[in-house]
Length: 265
Image (tube, rainbow, N blue to C red; front, side, top):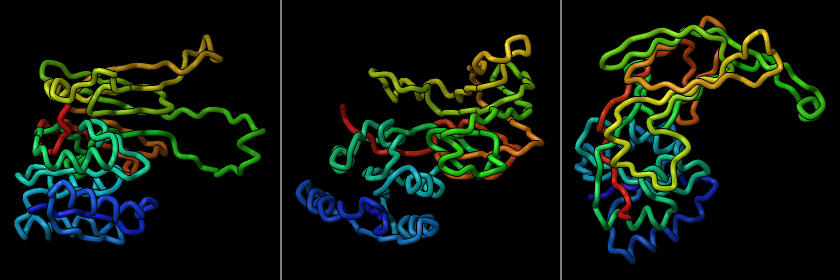
């Protein structure tokens, strides 16, 4: 049995009829559950699994997808995506470029056990974590145009652990990006190959050296299975675009813990 999770208040909710008609045309059946509040997505997924759903399909963007994986990770229930959101990074990773491709993937029934990241052992993420300094003052439209704001840097300690190594970095960062796959996605991106490298990618933008203050941020790229970030200053943490709200976090790669429906090439 398929279960479709859909937010009728989505900006692209008008596609619901087209999606339903196309699924009927393809011979794909299932129950459509409308969840008006995204915070209730998790409960809807739990109910679907308890009823014996073999697949739960998220109709929406990365926000809805993120809430669905919180329930389906480490289960035998497969997850499908019909992307209609503004950000559909995870769907693109799975080879699903649009809503039609998402519908068609359900007929092909090809699944892969994909890697996820996890924050402090509590919250899964599919694609990325962004860490930036908090804006203490919200500037207006004209201020942003005419005022040249000085970039702020925040002291952080980053500990990276791999199978055979463990090291610590202390730096003044402007931003940190942690991803489950290497970015940007290459034209010949192959998810099956990426799954074999079960390490997180860490990209750090940090303060240039004092001798050359006008130079651009220093960019450092490293890999690791476990990452611990500590900050006593105000930083903003987002997982898959959603606020996580923790100044200090532990991040790990969870190998092949989500059964995802992928598109055939």
